[in-house]
Image 1 (cartoon, rainbow, N blue to C red):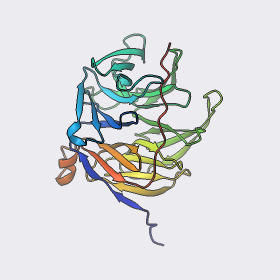
Image 2: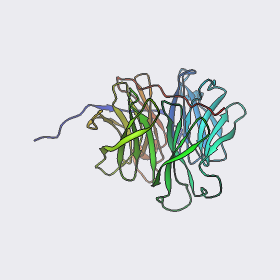
Image 3: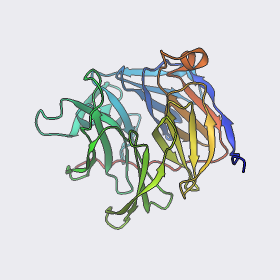
Image 4: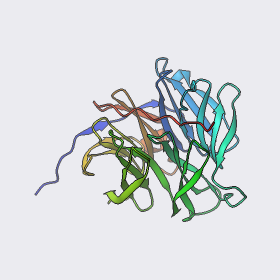
Length: 304
């Protein structure tokens, strides 16, 4: 019996920014801009999609920045939420300064970790993972998944993680997904729209090949478009967790994706040890026409 053929798309280079670790692509609908980060180089990039790659603007931070979110009732041209080394912060984009809203830890115990991926949930709370920071040897099982609420409470949802990654929700908001890169598992919970509680945790998808599932987005039909680090591709998973398509990317280390209309924008990391196109295009932003649209991101409710 032959291998089932799946639809495939080809991603093309859009912005050759040469990020060390490009991540966190986010479509800012109000301004028709795409923002994304370079975690290792501590940079927040923004590109105006109407003007194209030449419009790239970069804010240099003094700590690792890993993910962003819009804030409810706040103009994203003025301020946005950042996931930073020590927690979540509001970033003033004109002054290029940030102020922490909440931290992972109250004392010094979190020195070894930094933020990784995260997202705002249907209740306006921000979920954010932590992992071993760079320069401290091999990544250890010292990460966690945190949730920050509008009343400034912080909950450690999961602990003893190595690389907690993307968080997302089904189109109806009733299923929450979470990726753990090292175990190569995308988990799912039933998510209560009434009170934001979770139940019935289960394995939604187990990745079987050599790469590690990294960041994802959910489309309007409930399919998950999941970047796979080390495999030069984005996989499309059905709402049942079946592989039903893939986007081929010319560089190995694919990190995350974001929908802008029917275009899928894709961030990547450098591949200095690679060859040919993988080395040449490592750290670039790519895009592919995939014929479907994603879900609009929820906005963080800033503590009063």
